[in-house]
Image (cartoon, rainbow, N blue to C red):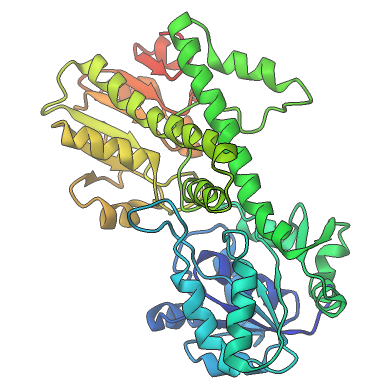
Length: 439
């Protein structure tokens, strides 16, 4: 593998920053990971991943063993770095839909006094357009120098973050500086050796790439979910319909899976922040449709709860099993999880809700302690009245409906992801429902 031999600081060592730090060190760079959380830093320096992500812990341990990676809480250590990535979180503000940039400003204030004269500051967090210019102004006011802040948006998919960092589908760099472009091309030479496209553009355009992509994906998901409601009422099958639509090369079949909707720490808050940013820029009418995209997504969760009430009539005291807690498989991330949102709603309606997930039980328990959790998948179905499949882990597709049917009280299943073999479950005596599927 090509060695890039750069010294890099990564500011913010959550999911995004920790993965970037480990992979850049793996590629031969000297990497300093900076975070304000001493417990997290100690954990990372011990080679223990603070979150579940396939391959991450192995890459982390390899990078630490090589001596190329170190995590710290001391901002002075960024003074050795040629390139400083800002990777802190930009969650939704409390009380409105705008992005909360407080972590951005804290990070900027922490590193500004310690930047080397030739340092290159690169934003990687998802931010409203115009943020880079404000960061640049703030750094230059604090340092009395003339830094140019570049933007290099990330496109990580949880569950595939290592491969997405090693081999992204594109590299976007927002800068007007030939020097910055040269240094970032050098840093990403291992990716460029794989013929991965690199796009150099102005900073505002680069800032808009990630939020625009997420808004488009959310729109596509909500479109097929809206059609699923029509299909259900018309007695049509949304899965067959989506397959037919997806064969049109202008549309494609990705993100046309109808179900309980999207969640996580990115897509929902990013489209809301995009709406807020559009309104601030005077383009409220242009982004108004995204409000409906968001509402359709939320409505899918309500549809599952309504269907559960219809199937059981009275949820009070009924045992309901929810398969899945993470917002998607191969992750322990439960932020804005559709599965947990539905589980909580059923709990409020009086159901005894038991949740299973291969990796996310502890994360879920911390957010929803009122729910019951069961790590034993074989035992969770005992005497249950309703099963909901809401996160499509592969182990759930492998369940034996005959064996489960022998221990449940009521063989009723809602597949909120429309991926189980309905025929197989129905042949085993189950009443199976999906969103946009024939009853």
